Image 1 (tube, helix red, strand yellow):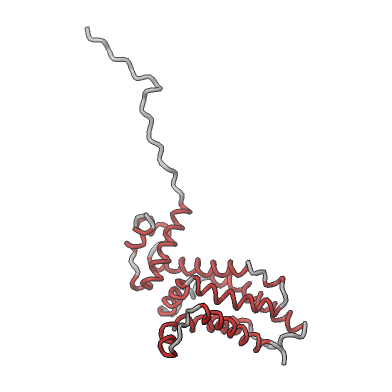
Image 2 (cartoon, rainbow, N blue to C red):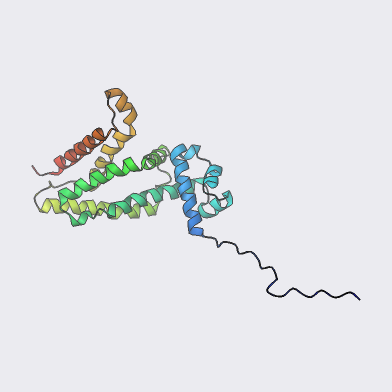
Length: 224
């Protein structure tokens, strides 16, 4: 009679291999980061979902699950880009310093942010190429810009009340001008360097540009 093999003891039974828990937030963040790089490099039209998924170490199914489609992903990237710059501006604590110093900090921050985050400009270029159709219905972007405009308005009002700044300055126009002084210079740095025979990105040229922009903005704001 053959011996009946004993059942494996509980200690010897194979246990199922533990699988790492899914982290939806981390996956979503990886997709957003990969998408930002892809859209900045190729624009909305040239961006490819396959490349984004591969760079994010995800699959297209997950990308569509989190963001719907390429256009919605592009909007999410734009919203994240605006959220990043607005959050960084809060760290300047502009409400805690005198108005002229607040403006100096805002001009310097805008200049340095564009220098250190060139993908922000290329994303804006792509959004404008498509006439901002992705942003026009974004309540998220509008909601984060309202307090930013209010902050600039407060700086201007404090400066006016103290007798330092002129009255009647539109905060939106002012910020557009500050951004434009940076945007045009950096967006055309190669052609302008070639035309004028200067290296516009040399340390000296960048320092001179920041000083020039600051003088222009404060010169406009200071009460005569």
